[in-house]
Amino acid sequence: MMHGFTDQEWESYLEGQLTTEEQDRIEAHMLGCWSCWDRYDQMNLTTDQLHEAGAAVRHSLQPSERQLQFAFRHVMQQLRAPAEQIQQRLDRLETVMAKMCGTRTAAQALQHAAKGSPAQSLELVTSDNWEPFLANLTSLAIVMCGETGAHLVRRNGQF
Amino acid sequence: MDEKRIIETFLQARNEATFGELFAVVYPRVQRYFRLRGMDSMMAEDLAQNVLLLVFQRSGELRAANLFLGWVFAIARNEFLRFWRQSRARIETVEFEAVESDHHFRIEPTFLQDARFYEWLRYLDPAERDLVVLRFVEELSYEELACAFALPLGTVKWRIFNVKKKLAGIISADAAHNQRFRIN
Image (cartoon, rainbow over all chains, first blue to last red; front, side):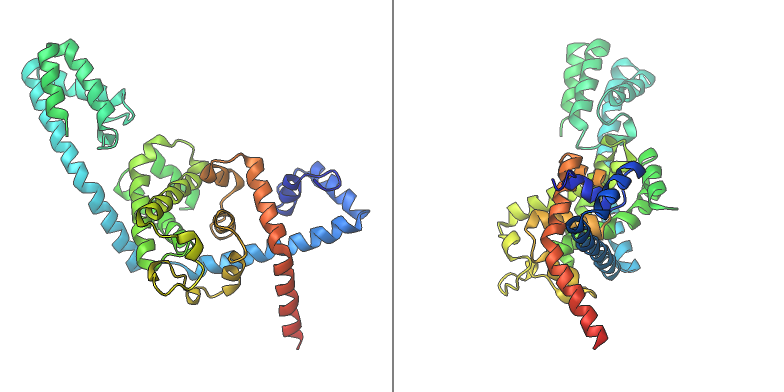
């Protein structure tokens, strides 16, 4: 706090993020306060220099297009591998359930279980959100296929 | 397409095409962050790829596009800490010093065209460096910084102002020196 203004207010003023009234209040004070004017001058220079030097760093540290493409391909490869495993597991669950309650009902059960889980849709089920999805599906399977059927679903869904 | 639009499009439809657009915008930022935390380029690339992988996998949890970059850098900071704990290296104390025995954590000032920024970072503690890098290099808003550091907005502003106070004397002296140099 300095002369009735908090550090947060000074910071917002330096970055031009105050409302017109708040800005007027600080400026009216600075017109009559040499120490605040002096301090503002120094802090304003610091702010400008930090932004300027930061921009220079930003431009000097850019990966090339080739590096960017290589990194993207690498990440996509990592994303695809578990996705394929998940798809195989979902197919297996659907096959197991289809035998007990029919293909259409099994597909709907999978979609419903995913919708009520953190994944929110079947396409977004991953190894990270697999457990809550499987718990939902097992609950549905108890109602649709009985305890034994649900146990079978749970066993087939476990990693 | 501007950055905001790219982020919104990705959050609305997560697929390879929208992720590709997002990757081109976010990956350079994250990689740069790790380099400015003192990592060599290969290590920075590896960690940045891990972060982008997590961004894709976890983006279903995030709805507010305006906090996206704050959320990304929260992941990046966690990834950095995880790596630091695993490697058991005392990275915070060595990252801006030339330690010959540990080349992974030796910062290379030559990669910076403007060495001033690097010099100023030396005067700050690790948490302050993080704040300065994300504010002035990555230009995160106060709201995004609050998200990245899990701090209230007022605390973020207060911390930035205090970093500026800490650097004001050094920066003013540098500016005065440069002005004299130009005149002579």
